[in-house]
Length: 440
Image 1: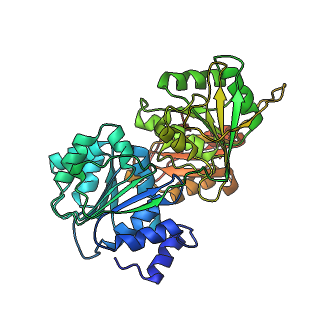
Image 2: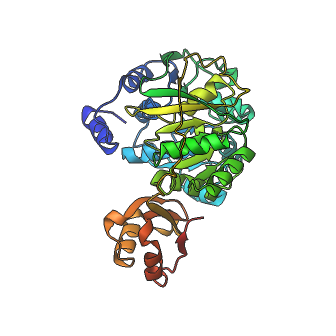
Image 3: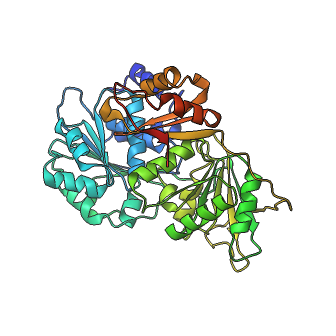
């Protein structure tokens, strides 16, 4: 696809971006040269668009079949990239493949081969073995956050996938860390490296340290969240069990929160993230699963309840805030026995908490679950129309709407929930009687 100034302007307008940043411009220019491309850039720097634009230049509207493949380490990152590509409005069909997604749905999406496929290594390899993905025409390969894929042990699947692509002419690898060794099976040819990693944290990111008087930091975390108030915060723990324990105890103390980790089923993950994105909960308690690929704008606080285990983990956690031009604060909670890891070289500002605590205001939104989605031909306009007409809601009482394959989430003003559910309990959406209730 030829990216003329007019086409580029239209794509950026669709993304609500005024102009490309230096990273994106350089990546676009360098990708047109011979050889492969290694793109090193900090989290939140606009890296997704920096590889999607070059991929687009290698795609041909007149060519049938799959032309590009993007391999990512997590389903959340796959979904985020798919959303960005769809917003660009290129006219090319795109689909996502990842564990936890119904294989039958993916197989239907793959029957008419998408121009670009985005997915996790295990699921992509499975589809190739089953013949659902025809790889012979794929010329462009992107390994996004390839260091994380290698860290998670996807080498065998990635080697199989790349070995199944006989027509590759361009490889683009991205990472937010520079130290990872690239395996031979990737097959890099005359690769050029664009290194946009910054040695220091962004000036927009404030760094603070909070001392807990007890080994169990829960009371300190509670007081901190009371101080944070109703601003969005992600609380990072190192273990799934800790995530659930912290979440439960915070709820018992009156802090509205949701939790998120790798052992949850996909609908549970979707529900937790939807509630956090739409303001039904301002606090997300999570493992490092949320340190990459989590698409939530305007996160104000990153709280390291457990200290990060490596520099890379620390970098990616902090990368959830102070993204692009926004500002944010990262807070490290230390127990009496703990000290800052050696890889945190900058001295954080000490943080003192007030003696008295006051619970934050409760969120003004509640998330409703609707048992129909894209596959049922339901879209956001349908949802808004249903709740304004049947539920008698004003548009300002309807918040963020997320439409998945087989269900939707919609945020509505908390004060309207009971009355709205009563009004719509016998109503139909798209001529179907659906389950609509407060999301679990």
